[in-house]
Image (cartoon, rainbow, N blue to C red):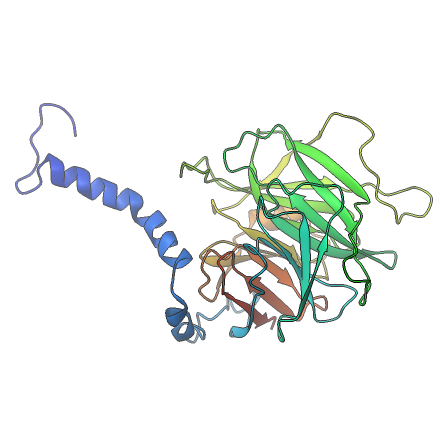
Length: 338
């Protein structure tokens, strides 16, 4: 309020300030309400009303009504990333958040059966997402150690891990074939949303622009990091041959501040991002450049209520989308791709 002016009658300084604070806090309060919605309320919201249950425009990407599957294994501490298994049909991969140990868990989302593997010789500083893909007949997992809640890390890391077969020896650790370090041209970013192009040509990343203090730095950026493969057989990933991290440029800016998960459809034509509140689907036409597709308005998708839902993936065949939550005792959700 400008000094020397009086407030309107009935709206003194204390009330005026309270109203301003309430307006400013409303979006965050709404998000917090979704993060902490109790399981009893989730059942009521499992099937959204007609026209809102995961459908966008009539011409856009559409999802069917959500199906609640098995509860995630309680041993998984904060499911922060999600990817479809390429060697064990119907199963998914997930991992815990930062500090949870270098473990990957493959699980059956319907029956709840699971198996856990240690990733050898790496540290889970802040693993935030996971992607899977096939290249020349080999199956791969990409682990994104890209979390940076305080935006202070001089570089972040991606680990490429060969996916084990459908019946690996129990207790066997998974090797890292290559680790890639990089940073962002526009400064440190917290990134919780990562996807890999079909065939492993490049990694896509989306920045989360709310830091640990609640400060908003702008809208989310999208970045692309090409992967390097051996010249001889094109199936072995190459680590960077320098101690200097690679630098990635911002290719697009999205109309959101909080992407928490991302995946690419197996056909490479649809990019799906999730926030705590909704899904955003970007679909390109034929060989349209991705920067042009990302500049268009997305199809906005209603998602089932999840307490701090941070992970999403397409099924290996592209017929469904799966969602998990970082909160314990939460179910896995499945939505068909229509």
